[in-house]
Image 1: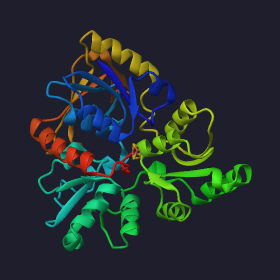
Image 2 (image 1 turned 135 degrees about the horizontal axis):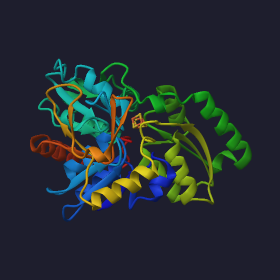
Image 3 (image 1 turned 180 degrees about the vertical axis):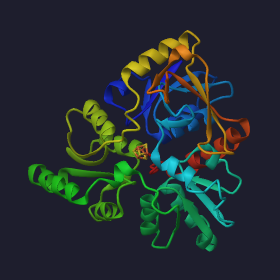
Length: 355
Ligand code: SF4
């Protein structure tokens, strides 16, 4: 069994993991596995889904902990953007266009595998696709983070058809440009503008992204931001993203001055070191609290089956808290989602915005 973590859970969870990465890095790790294995993922659910789709047949993927509301709805750890996509009638009322449809990497596997979806994107792939399909570019619809879609529109200098309206990452969308500017000004006074790098996650608000582009910032996902500090060209970095990545960068690069504009994702912090420890022990003993089986036919798109009541706790008579929970995806969804994820991973320019 391997323990993998995204960069956003707390630092102690990341450091207790065998591998930590951004979504793209986690997907590539899964795709490069030589034989099936059990993977305990500290992340939100869609990342665990992507890893399960890409890992060799026979692999099992678990989340260390989940909150199942009212005994049915898989509530956390799920990215609210995904829930928004799921409830926004994209599936239920079939609002996907009859033209060319791309879905953002932060989406559930059933949407990634939907027959009307043509590609999965992060920013670089979307930009490549628009360039490749120049004559069809007006027919492309992007389903996902509105801020990322606006960034793509800004970079391409063309209107982008963005859906669903108001679908953003609440964590990054709360970051205020004035706070970023204040920290940047202080950093320039302290270290000299030429020595200060700016790293901005692509899910920030459009005004922050535009300001960043003007200042020569790296607009990226988590993996790209981490690699930029690793390259180490500047002595100080202003970083506008979730605090988990900032903690990891400070830990791994103690000689760099890290000046963060912090954001907090409660979904990524659902999993604690204790959940991780207990889940590892139980998986080794062959025990699972519950199974979340993806079901695209009805909201909330997971059917939850309690497997071992002794691994579950009930809260207030309506929430079930299983440790661990296994993610199960039907083969037809897995296969199509994996094929489209591979297209994204190996066609994108490598510094995608997805998480
Ligand atoms: S940081 Fe934003 S996009 Fe990432 S899991 Fe949290 S809410 Fe979703």
